[in-house]
Image (cartoon, rainbow, N blue to C red; front, top):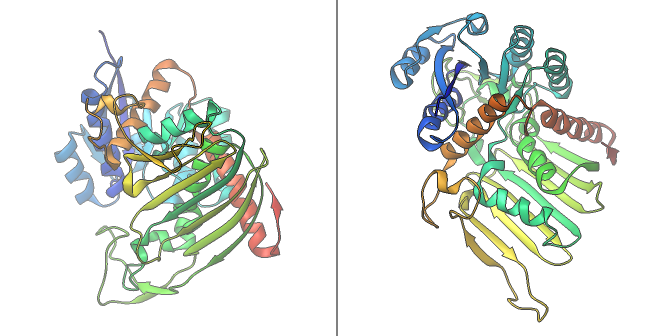
Length: 386
């Protein structure tokens, strides 16, 4: 089978940029039967050590400190953005104007207005887009969505979505760009709750209205050293700086299908490590999933006689979407990087088919609409329509 080569340029070579590069490298193996072949052309970062390491580890043909060189490169078909949020709008506008397809990490813009502007730029240029809502791609999550779309749970009545990731629970966790409104824009509402909102859209459908609250529990942190560490890093000394966005968000939600629910996310919580989770209840059954047990889905589907009267644990296996691309055995689990590989492969498949797929900038804009309503609710302390 003759394969089409798709040139990749990545902007931002921190932890996430490295993860994306690794995902593209994995596609040739995990999805070897696909008629496409990603090729790592160039990576950009203003920290030279990062691009040098990326070239050595992943085989990029060249490096640059300037993202514009990525966009100008004739061999690059896809601009993959893993830079801080403050750079996203400028990069997307330039890449779209150059006719490049664009993959961008969530929450896409620093705030909802930037996300909508980014979506508009891609629409004007008629380029294909992808967004890093990677939790959608867990095989058992895909299976859960299939069960719901087939009506197996009956009429949906309740939804609870949450993302508890205590990466900043220690007060000496460094003041990375994620804690600074000028660079990151939104805090937990952008970083974590964007995943919660997108998952709810994927599982439940559109949201009608919300009422929300927020809090910043740790107002100061040690200033991070530029170009070193991640947002998981700790510092025992050094200058302190102010946290200028929110640590916590909670919301009550009403869906357009009439179901009620809750959203909650926190980056300073103790206990959970990466509890991106949801629970769905309907008139005929229920199901629940937690990323900390990524390869397990709990399903409650009693028969007419009321049994089994409790949840049944389902393990990810070859009968679920994408699992067999990684291993042939049920119960042999996938991990986070595998979700990014699936994500990258699906995006490139959309490019090969020349057809926009989900999730793209349209889905990010839908998340932004909910985020706007949530922020308005913070100010007005009432229910807000989306």
